[in-house]
Amino acid sequence: MELLEVNALHKSFVQAEQQVPVIRGVDMTLAAGEVVVLLGRSGGGKSTLLNLMAGIETPDSGDIRFQGEPFAELDDRGRTLIRRRRIGVIFQFFNLVPTLTVAENLQLPLQLNRQPLGGRVDAMLEALGLVGLGQRFPEQLSGGEQQRVAIGRALIHSPPLLLADEPTGSLDASSAEQVVKLLIEQVRVGGHGLLLVTHNAELAALGDRTLILEEGRLKGAPERKLS
Ligand SMILES: Nc1ncnc2c1ncn2[C@@H]1O[C@H](COP(=O)(O)OP(=O)(O)OP(=O)(O)O)[C@@H](O)[C@H]1O
Ligand SMILES: [Mg+2]
Image 1 (cartoon, rainbow, N blue to C red):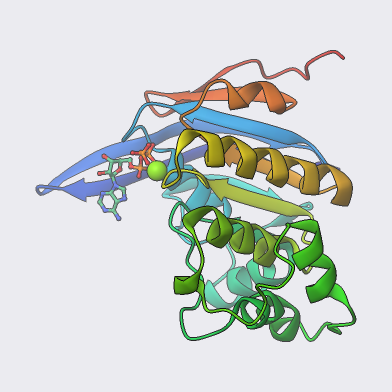
Image 2 (cartoon, rainbow, N blue to C red):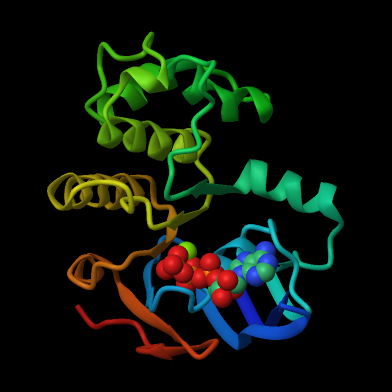
């Protein structure tokens, strides 16, 4: 069974009183543990596609199956529960809770899912190179450090799927590369599936497969890369 299966997905937005199609028939699958990189021009609909997969947006038509379960048809609450338990999301701008410390931000998904904390927060701080920063607040961290916390928060409850929307968009090139490498390393270690949106075609080499969103449809190599 595929982790994620998307069929004939369509989504349009109303802009200046016009219905503008953004996603125009997307089909794709993502297998458990697979790392797929999504490229495409600005405004092409990458974030929209990711938000549909995260259940943050709903499609006009088409089908999304998450671990075989129809996802798009669920109500808000049903989609929120699946997202909370089984999908980690990383956005371009960190989205950490500013009033919580780093350690508390990392605890949040475990608490929401009623999972034991065990030593998981400390283990994650260690894995992300953030030892000693647990008691700081997000604003007391650099952009790269904040984004590492966001990665930790998305992975700490071990969701089978991680969706990352330009997680390095607000970082300089060298921290961006470090953060993406760390992200992919953690995803490989944990066996998570990852859909990674990036503008950096060089980073695409780190994935198993690259897709390009063009005119609302996916182009690229749908078959697995041989290695
Ligand atoms: N909630 C919305 N209401 C109306 N239009 C929207 C909405 N969200 C996105 N759009 C439009 O849909 C199109 C695709 O936007 P989207 O953010 O998905 O692109 P993107 O590929 O992620 O771009 P970028 O690389 O700049 O992040 C754009 O024209 C955008 O203006
Ligand atoms: Mg975007």
